[in-house]
Image (cartoon, rainbow, N blue to C red):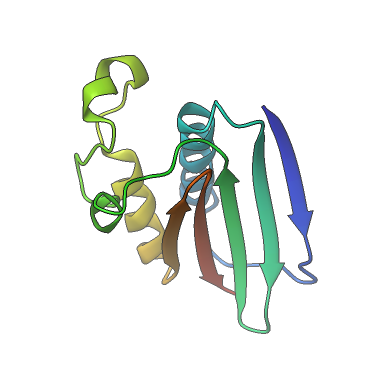
Length: 126
């Protein structure tokens, strides 16, 4: 897989717990590799507005079912239940990601359609 960075941010500085925020991005990038491995790219986008910094992590693997999307941040929820032994994980990763983003008064959204899944995080600027 190839990593691509798209950055239009001019002042992407937030105040937060660096270790916890690193865990958010590590988890999302690991998931992008694990579940998007049939795609060729992982895209990371960084942009900002006057008040927020927005980070998008996208992969080009199989889409997440529309039935699963509302539950994706629930503890122990696994989209690929039949492949849990192959992919590993406990279903806690995205719940932890959401709790850390919430702790920073941010927002996280997921959009998934045929061939592209993207997680978007919005954090308040300092």
